[in-house]
Image (cartoon, rainbow, N blue to C red; front, side, top):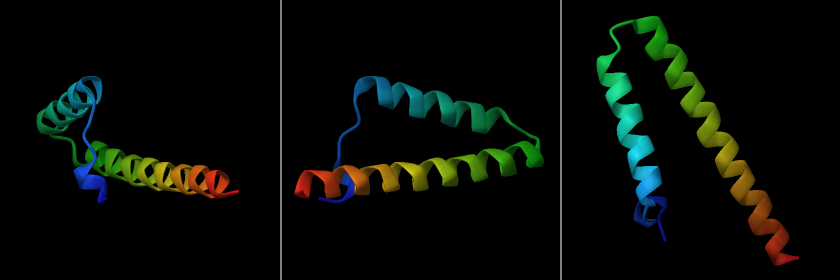
Length: 59
């Protein structure tokens, strides 16, 4: 199953929508750069966490 196929909860959908609106409202390139970097780090940490959980389930 691809991560794009995993459904978001209603709360997650609202959070995504709120974040997207915040990005759309931002005109500061430096702020957008910082946000992009933070999102990349967060996504990498979530993937690492998922990998650890899956490894532990296999034990």
